[in-house]
Image 1 (tube, rainbow, N blue to C red):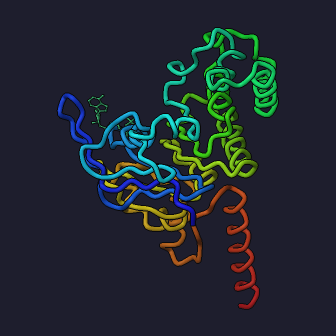
Image 2: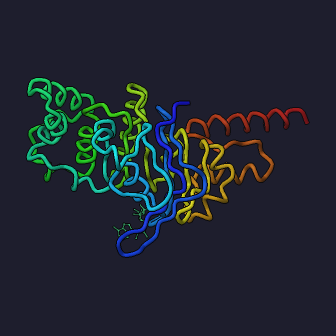
Image 3: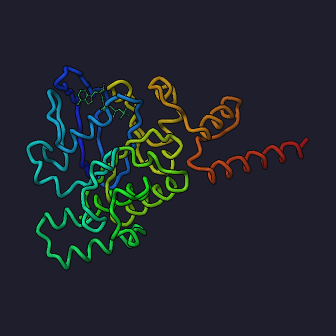
Length: 284
Ligand SMILES: Nc1ncnc2c1ncn2[C@@H]1O[C@H](COP(=O)(O)OP(=O)(O)OP(=O)(O)O)[C@@H](O)[C@H]1O
């Protein structure tokens, strides 16, 4: 496993003395993984992301990204990290969508022709080429998220950090965004760190899940590991995906069920269960 992020017992104190103490399990991300952070409001997700991005300095603990210190090696790491902030309005700065997506490559001294090629290529990939001449302010919420994501991906970063990427998207756009992120991860082996409150999307996107409860990293594992032992989720004031809740109830009644990864998986398990029940009845 090639470790790309390691955060150990991080303590941060904001100027107004608010303390965020991210201790407990180490937060480790390996190359190519899609890691989802689950936490209730104010638990410390954004604080953790801001340390990984080198925007904050830890009072205690260590933060390592690609073997470097994000704070000290900010300039070196900047080119290797892509980020989509929770409030995309704060990050879309170009007068037109085209300028916004081309901003980072242009700033990195890449020649105009090459920037033009990069912007057009990523816009085609993301299906936003018809928007290139638009003024970002007039885009819909979902379009803004896509533009911000294209701007974050245009330099093909090693690590993509997404703070609430599904917020304010309608159901169709959420599903599209999940597909899109899975596609980017597969095509480019991009490591992704994603925060979300959208619990029902987690099984579709997460390779690894971390649960943060009031500043403590209390659970880590793949979907089955984290949701089969869902007390940590409830204790952290989070909800369990509706399909998982249903299947855990069936399991507690003695049926051999696993938390389903998606609707297709749930359907398969239920059909299998019905078949077994029919066979048992036939034997009687
Ligand atoms: N700039 C700041 N100054 C003072 N306190 C802050 C600042 N930023 C965050 N905090 C506090 O730190 C704690 C953790 O906040 P953080 O934004 O990391 O949580 P979060 O898990 O991202 O929450 P949410 O899901 O609501 O966005 C909260 O108590 C918050 O009030």
